[in-house]
Amino acid sequence: MSKLKILVAGDPVLRQKAQEVERMDKKTLRLLDDMAETMYAANGVGLAAPQIGVLKRIVVIDVGEGLIELINPVITYREGSAVGPEGCLSVPDYEGEVERAEIVHCEYYDRKGRKILIKADGLLAVCIQHELDHLDGVLFIDKAKVLMPKDFDGEQ
Ligand code: NI
Image (tube, rainbow, N blue to C red):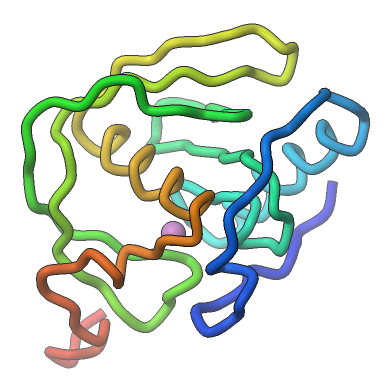
């Protein structure tokens, strides 16, 4: 496994639409491993492939409940709305308040090609919506109702 460089806002790759994965091959499996390593090394809870310069619809998430690898994920159901804090490994200097659905259902394929449906709420629901936005070139700063520098109040 190897740690990859995370692109930061301003890089045009982050604004492009990612393509579906058509088959699981060794390259895709290695990418999943590298993405997880990169996310953990950066203390992130989620990472989308465009953030490391790969325009594929692949996301890794770990909100403290174990690693989830999502290939070609699609949100099939949304319910409610809530505003909460968000940050992003590609926007290291800012945090913001973003409105998201409270509950989402997400269909995706795992690394073995099995189709999975998860029903998520809380941080996992927010994370799924944030990471799937990356696959369409959308960053949380586009949606933030409030955006502020991380050292705004002199604290970290
Ligand atoms: Ni992000």
